[in-house]
Image (cartoon, rainbow, N blue to C red):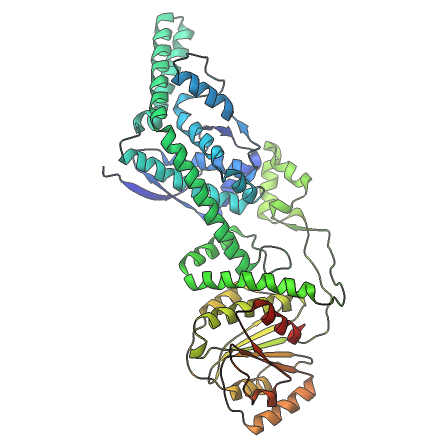
Length: 516
């Protein structure tokens, strides 16, 4: 069967509920998510309605965001009980609020609930607009594939299951008009036709229910796996908690970064290595003797992070009268939210200046390690209110970037780290000359050189470097990655270490000794 497909933005629709009533807050957040991220859904033209699919997406979002604390038109248990009775030929009364034309959507909702991974997916999404929205769209696309496969295999009577709503509504209107006109015969005829059509819908649903249930279980497993992988990568690269990288609260930015991860395999590799190094960094840092506690907690701030909003602010969105005010405050970022941002007192230390070897020999695992460790060091420096300079070198100093604690640009750092290329030889003279002549002339700087190479250094530059360190209190540490220490490094370095990059704990301990 040749099915015509189309990929289209999820539409914002106000059509009738399919399985549940969306709350005012979830309704607002779903529309905000769709407008901000413009997610796509693939559907079959002239086979089922994109508006109906979009409405189903909103209802899935409601379930995910509110952890299934929702107002069902017909409870899942009531639908299942009624469906079994109808399949057994029992002409029991139709549950209040139930429409046979929505039977397929009630059935799919029940199948999602029965999926083994559904409770875990709910935990990932509760109160999280980005995750709830993203996973609702993922589920929509998976359900669309299930429907497509069933149609292609001629297992689904799509006309009955997807396109009976208009005919059933006509019969309801005819019945109501006949009752109003006192025409009992016509009313009975409309009722009989409606019951017959409803029975056919349930028979068609029974034919595919087992298959759809199995596919829904697989779909939820897949969605959970994709969600966890994406969240781990985003958390590793950009941080997902206050004081650890950058908190991504802007949906369009999150969406762009997620798309960038999908396109850039090298960035995925960096994210995986970064996650490991960051965990080890925190473990080793906690194991070090604590000199002081500089943490402070602030109380409240204005913003648009709904998850951190005070209950009084959320209450606005729960009423039709307050929804407009809530939307205005959201757009102007004036919602009163809880502030968990950690503050640190200035420790009075200078910047961290990194020189990272990008010669051809650094290709492969060393490249990933050096990129990931540069991010980890930068995160620690920003927490300590220290500026970070990252300079790339081979036979000369190439690209450079400066990250300041007053205006940290994590996105710029990631683009810089993921974008640098390798090639050329190694020159330690280029590092020393840049540090002395071009680098920051600030007291108590920590200079860190990461290299796997060997190079000669002129006596002139060593003399000038030693004078520079004496005048500024700068300390220069050299990390020789997966190689022995060249003897020349002892002549210009205050500390020299040979680092085994496959031993994360040992390498982290070494770096922390240099900069903490």
